[in-house]
Image (cartoon, rainbow, N blue to C red; front, side):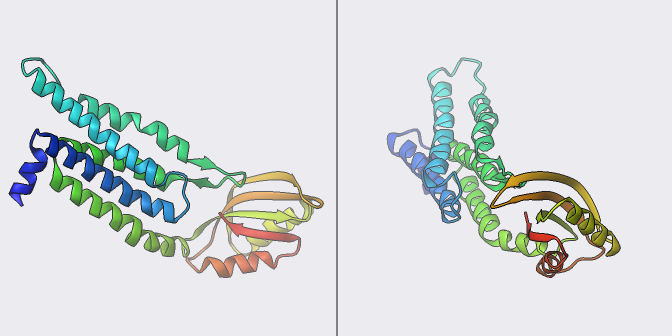
Length: 230
């Protein structure tokens, strides 16, 4: 194992190629998870971010080796990569017309992918492999757990379509009668086959429960055309 680590850390053409290969492999593995879920940033984006970050650290090491007497901070370029990768993350985060925020996990994945690339670029192979394993654990194991917890949370973000404004008043009155609190309430008008009124809101139930049951109850309220959790 020590011989393999020494090989990755060696300042040779083969050692540098091995670092870049490991960074690319890590980006591809993380990107595959996003690609399977049809996200905006997939295999190519994550691989490019990871290999770019690795290259930044390799260039940093090259500068230090070429000018050993200079007052060079080995972490300077890496720090710029960590902060600069934010522009890609912002590009993957969108807010839909229903006030639904999407892309946060992909943005976080790009950021951590850059960190893994920095580790691979400087030859920190143990850290690269461990971080990659933890990322896959989070994306593949913890995500279903997160969905199950979210499905029984007391708070729900709703998108609701109503017949008219009077239906909204009836809907809110019905929720208050059930002891359900409503916050972040916003009304929108949209054109479909006929004019309809839509609203987004956050509701807080008195106790934890299955969201599907609550959604069914909400849809049965007179005047509600459509209800969905966002």
